[in-house]
Image 1 (cartoon, rainbow, N blue to C red):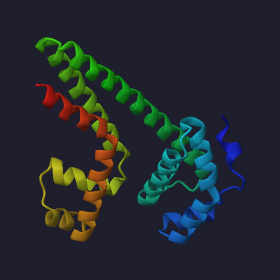
Image 2 (image 1 turned 90 degrees about the horizontal axis):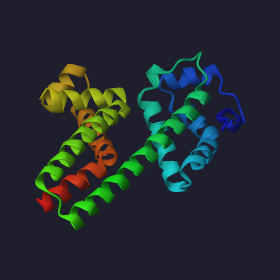
Image 3 (image 1 turned 30 degrees about the horizontal axis):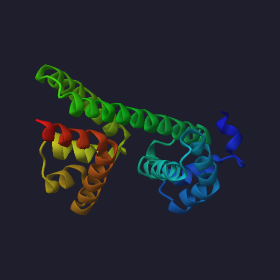
Amino acid sequence: MNAMKEVSEPIDTDLIARIKKGDAKSLELLFRRLYPNLCAYARKFLNDAVEAEEIVQDLFSTLWEDRHKLDEQQSLSSYLFTSVKNRCLNFLILQKRKTKHADLMRFLYVQEVSGEAAHSYHALLAKDLEKDFHTAMEDLPTECRKIFELSRQEGLKYQEIALKLNISIKTVETQMSRALAKLRLQLREHIALVLLLAFFK
């Protein structure tokens, strides 16, 4: 699939520069210009209009959060279409893994496997969870990820994070809520499996 064929108008460097400086209207213009084509491109991978729209919307949200990273010399449209493709493929991989886990859970239930087999699966699940957690963290916007790490990994309180990053406590609270929501969404199949395994113990 040639993503560049989906773009009807070129994205000028001035528009990218305005977005990078925090011009929300320029982002809205970019959204209106590319959103329909990006959604159509995502549907080619997912065949699911709702999920395709969610992926594209989340991409624009991340783009805005990380706007300071934009390269005015890079083709923004190419970047967006490539990002949509990668996010769709990641979604499909997670769905496949979810199906695999569900099949194995049914096996555990029907066969009443030995403790050794169950222990092996627990170890595999923990390894998958750690890998997916790191991937989910990398997908968070830069500020969002930094705040989450300061809170959950370094143990700082919200007030301490606000002082350290020179931002308001409200911003810390908002970004933490967003980080937790995104992590819960991306790790939802792991959470369900942990609950099921606890039930079967």
